[in-house]
Structures are given as C-alpha cells and as structure tokens.
Image (tube, rainbow, N blue to C red; front, side, top):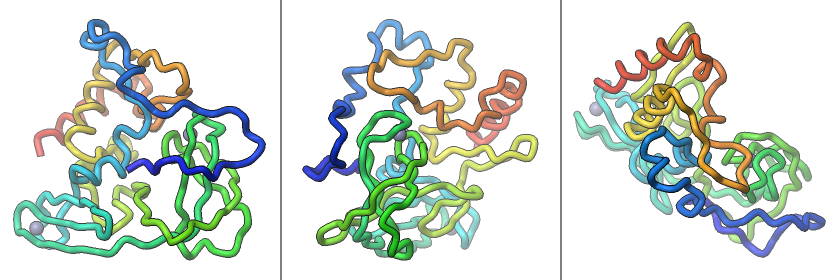
Amino acid sequence: MIPKRSGARLPGRGRRSPAPSPMKSRPERGSAMIRAADSPPGTYSTAAALRTGLMVKCPACGGPGAVTADEERFYFRCERCRKVMEKPRAVSRRKVEGLCEGCGRFYRVHLPEETGGFPVLRAACPYCGHEMPGRVQKVPGGWYTVWGDIRNGREPWFGLELWFLSSYRGKQVWALDRAHLAWLIGYLGAGLRERPAVGYLGRMESDHLPAFMKTAKDRAGILKCLKRMQEK
Ligand SMILES: [Zn+2]
Ligand SMILES: [Zn+2]
C-alpha cells in the first residue's frame, strides 16, 4: 500500500534513504522475543489496517464492523447485522513528495481535489507525522488515495466511530484493530521499551503515541483502559 518510489524526485537532495526493509533491520530473534520491541512507523497505519479490516462501530446496529479497501472502493461490512456500505475512492491528481525531514524516509502524499491552486502546501509525512512544506506536483492519470487520519475517534472514509475507542482522563485512547490493540498493550505493559536496531529510522511506531500514553504515571490506567477494550 506504500506507493513505490518513482523516478520523479525533488532536485537538489543527494541523500537517498534506503528502501524500507523492516525484516532485515529487526534485532536478532533471541533478544527480540524477550522484550516488547518497538515497530517501524506505519506498521499500524490506517492504510495497513485497511488491508485486514479497520474495526468500527456499525451505524445501524452498534455492532462490530470492518472498513476495508481495494483498488477502486472502500467498503464497510457489519459482522452482526450484515449491513454493507461502499464508496468509490477519490482520485487525486496532485501530490507532494520528497525526503521527510523528520524520519528521513521517502514519502508521497496524494492531495484531495479541494486543496487545489497552491504551488506549495504543508503535508504530513505518512510515516512519522512530521509536517513540512512541499512542492505540489501533478500526478499523471490520477492516483487513488489511501492515507487517512483518525479524527475525533472516527475513520475518515465513512466517518464511522472506531470499535476500539475509549477515553482516559478526558483523552481518547483507541486502536485501529485487534492487532494494534495487542501491540499497544504489549508495548505499554513492557517495563523495558527497546527500539529495534534500525539505522536509518529516526522515529518508531511508539513516537505516534500521544505523550500522555507514554508517561509513567498514567501508564497503568491507560493499560487497564486498553485491556477493557480487548474484551469487546
Ligand atoms: Zn450492524
Ligand atoms: Zn517522516
């Protein structure tokens, strides 16, 4: 789902970030098994969750449902009442791309049509969230957008509330799917928080976590909150 790098690159940047290869860059198996290793950013992105099913609450029956996507459409399917919705993917004809100043990876963001007209726009890196200005370029033939943000506990395509959504001290705590939830619990529950030995990456999955989820004083409460969600 991560777009392949094309020949078009921003001029004047000699540094080339190596292609992402999380398998190679993981620590040796023995040590990784004992500790809850961090994951490269993007492991639990919305784009990744769309492949297996991003868990949301059904608007008809309140039961669990999943949002998925293929080349042409987004789909919602309820596991309980079998409600189905679908929506064509918006075609984006403009993009911003380059090397991220935050994590050093090559990123490409396809822009919604309504942002038209500006030669330079601020875009957030899909891997680490770092915002930076980028030159807007035309995409020949258009491109289907897959990146999207969770806002106010809702996914961006149908606007449905996440299934794994709760709050702790007035702040939202959520997970995209069961695997993401399990990872959060393992990560926050581990006494030792180890970054994998990744040379080229400055930031890891845990850098996506809001600061309040990482503070020691709140960790126990948030963990309890996450574990309660696991029983859903
Ligand atoms: Zn339903
Ligand atoms: Zn980045």
